[in-house]
Length: 173
Image 1 (cartoon, one colour):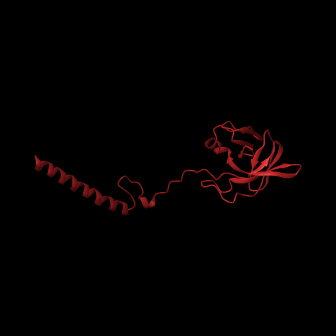
Image 2 (spheres, one colour):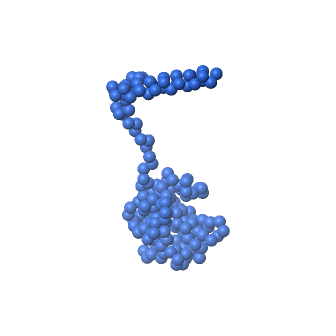
Image 3 (spheres, helix red, strand yellow):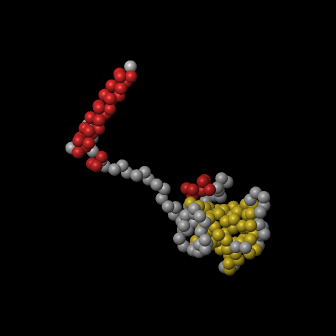
């Protein structure tokens, strides 16, 4: 019985060796046994499309008018409750957050009567990615919403403008 198993295994190895030897010869002639072109003559498959970089604004941009119903701290300084014009600047924070797309954090200025009353860093999230970042319902296009976050320690200003979402988080004053 052992001899029969040994002979069968030896026959399998010999037949496999003949197939392996025949394959390189057929590839050298330009085709394989199925008549298809050899690997060196194959046309490469196109790569699947990848997500393009988000279109982040590059210059200053007026984001609209917001009303803060309570005082907050912006850049560590008090920003009283009131109505402000909001402007995105070209300035980025000195230290970018790890994992952020370059340029996705920028300074926002809060103006009254043309004078800057405060500023804070905003995170810019493209429309296509907002569901990955935020679970709440976003404000309507070209509008904003101000929310006190759970625990009452932070206030979030969320602006939806020009295909991007601007998230600004303030410590409560």
